[in-house]
Amino acid sequence: MLDQLTYASEAALNGLMAGVMYSLVALGFVLIYKSSGVFNYAQGVMALFAALTLVGIQKGQVPFAHLINAVTGGHLETFGWQVPAVLAILLTIVVMIGMAIVIETLVLKHLVNQAPIILFMATIGLAYFLEGFGDVMWGADIKTLDVGLPQGINETIESVTDTWFGYGFFIDNLDIVAAIVSVALVTALTLFSQYSKQGRALRAVADDHQAALSVGISLRFIWVLVWSIAGFVALVAGIMWGSKSGVQFSLSMIALKALPVLMLGGFTSIPGAIVGGLIIGMGEKLFEFFVGPLIGGATENWFAYVLALFFLVFRPQGLFGERIIERV
Amino acid sequence: MKDTGAGITTAEGGSVGPVLMELRNITLRFGGVVAIKDISFDIREGEIRAIIGPNGAGKSSMLNVISGFYVPTEGEVWFRGEKRGPMKPYQVARLGIARTFQNIALFDGMSVLDNIMTGRLTLMHSGLLSQAMWWGKAAAEEDEHREKVEKIIDFLEIQNIRKTPVGRLPYGLKKRVELARALAAEPKILLLDEPMAGMNVEEKEDMCRFILDVNDEFGTTTVLIEHDMGVVMDLSDRVVVMDYGRKIGDGPPDEVRNNQDVIDAYLGVAHA
Image 1 (cartoon, chains in turn purple, orange):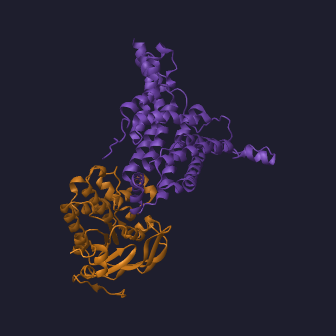
Image 2 (cartoon, chains in turn green, cyan):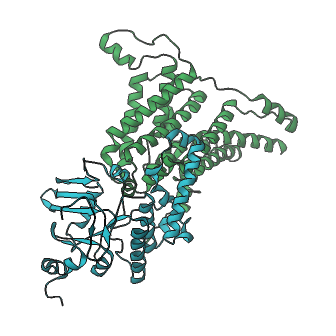
Image 3 (cartoon, helix red, strand yellow):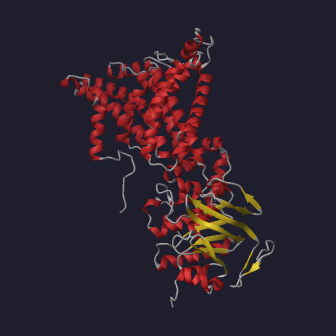
């Protein structure tokens, strides 16, 4: 029985760590949703694109190599240099900001004062475009991403739990880093949105475009800012997921896992994204551990969605979302 | 009345300053519809200038032209002796022209205090990075702005709702918060689009008092649109009367009241 409990706590702990990863993606969604009222379907693809760009820059890949080779008949692959991780990350941030500006100019600018559903549709288009664009730019092969984050089993935790329970827990160092990074990110973003001039402007724009204009807020600037931040969050998520499981196009599918997280936590709450991610991560592992064997396993694939369904029925605004009140 | 230098004396005996804004031959068309037809008038420093007229006369359109939400098809807007080029609404706001809306445009999800603080965005100067990092200057600046905002909150007597999300407030208070937000910008010109629409008598009296007090205390130049004739006559120094997009009267309330065109168009013929 004690063994059971020990294994269960290990599963729970691992679940929490996995949950942090979900939260990171969900965070990107919440951020854009809160500040522009747009549900950005492309957030997952942005994480993929950011990770691809980071690997590409780091390894000195020639962008659009296939395209160039096909036209010129050459055999370009790389520039033959390696870019240090920190510099590569900075350059990727620049690329993501550039992307924010392009998105604003080509898409959002023309959709001012449109219904949210229109903007949502636009982000679906954006997701498909970006996926294809990432493919053409950097190639479709699976890449390994290594920016020097610690990986593998954390020996301190293993030895400590070994002396306590007589069984060493397996916790990945990368998961611990991800947890720390998420906490830092959330703290910074919360402070920024609550207490800074731009944060206030951001919330204002999400609330009412006209009123925002009348107090001197430039919508274009705020949108570029929001999408840049979303790009940055996508990059962080991309780095974490990429380091864990390689940069591949299935990475954009992690966005799907973010949806149940959002339904649980509420679309408008940054803490909700975090808590939602943790609950789903942990719930998934525990459910698999306790109930899985009874019903033939593989519950992790669907558990999150079923949980989200329950929430949709009984508490549609999520745990932390704003109550939906219509005044009549 | 083409003097732009010295002040003039109004019929009420109050004196107003030199010309602050001049609208020259403004025409505004939407497709085939002419919302404003060749209208010119000026706004003088420190006055309360009313724009009145029946429904659909083009009053709100006029206000939208001043605040940059509409770009006039023809005509020029002169502000502080300079011709204003085509501008976005947020750029106009940064010139110091604050406004309220007929249908209230507040940030429902934010508290009253935060709403009013947004009014000061144009006056905040610390950069993005220091804001993000919460370095000393930004914090000090925030405090300073908070102080000014608290004064306005006291002035408009909304202390007890400072932390309430605006979405929960009743209509009359929302209007007052909107006025507070506009005032927070320390505007050169304050534009009020039907500040008393939909209010009961008591709320109207309060709002009247606030508008007059603001004008007295801060010397704020105010342009307001209002339906209620009585209110307009009591409040304003000078009145522009519009009908079907044209200007049919311009002058002190008493003069306008006795103008036959105005009586016909606005009050209806043989009303008394």
